[in-house]
Amino acid sequence: MKVKRQSKIIELISRYEIETQEELADYLNKAGYRVTQATVSRDIRELKLTKVQSESGKQRYVALQHQGPFSDKYIRVLKDGFVSMDMAQNILVIKTVSGMAMAVAAALDAIHFHEIVGCIAGDDTILCAVRSTEDNVQVMDKIRRLLAE
Image 1 (spheres, rainbow, N blue to C red):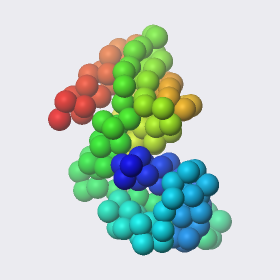
Image 2: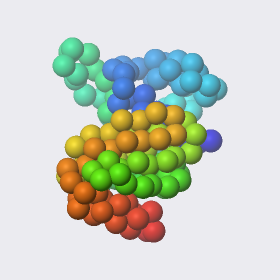
Image 3: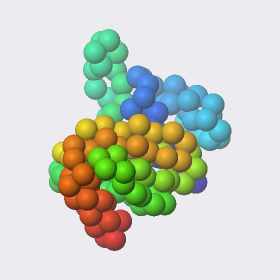
Image 4: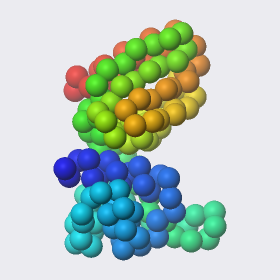
């Protein structure tokens, strides 16, 4: 439950300009996660979220970038949500656990594979536009290696 909730938090802060813990708790409660302010506070600390000024001038939560090429939390989200993948020329189709596609897509975006131009996520399916068929094979290999770690 904690991993799904934290994945939802990553998804929510990437989608909305969330300024306060209370606002984040409201979004989580609307999404079906029964949370208290203390739980949200712990999740913020564990996810290493911080506030930055957005384009609108408001403060918003964002995930701190890991010192390495990408954070362990994104790999955890990928591992927890991943079911399978297949390719159709330069389109990578990733199947996920129901309800996890957006979080996994956000994790893929955060990992910054240079071969992936962008991702579109539904409930349990992600479509990734990849630069070429050859790049698609490389991305699939990279994802397999991440999942095997």
